[in-house]
Image 1: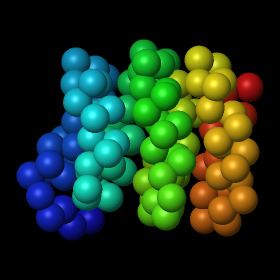
Image 2 (image 1 turned 120 degrees about the vertical axis):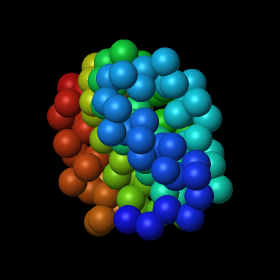
Image 3 (image 1 turned 90 degrees about the vertical axis):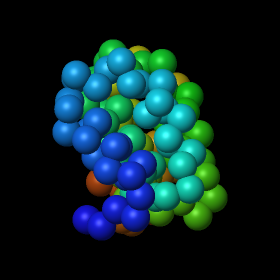
Image 4 (image 1 turned 45 degrees about the horizontal axis):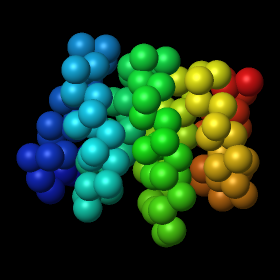
Length: 117
């Protein structure tokens, strides 16, 4: 994967840090709005690795799923993060059901729904 910015490399590093990246959760949430889709994707993946500890990221992940024209890779990563949070992400069920209508996102949305329920 090619990153065009240091932000992308930083997001990748935080994703790979796993739960050690928890102190950067607020930064990762902010980067869900980054202009670079790779940063958004890696930020969502890094949030997913925090599991239920990332429950405060649910509103931002929902918002990320509602961005018109968002890249399917970002949508899949955001859905994955919501699923990783589990039942604490129940408020995301309506948006995940909407994502099921997108063929390239459907499997990730369905997996997230199962993890939440």
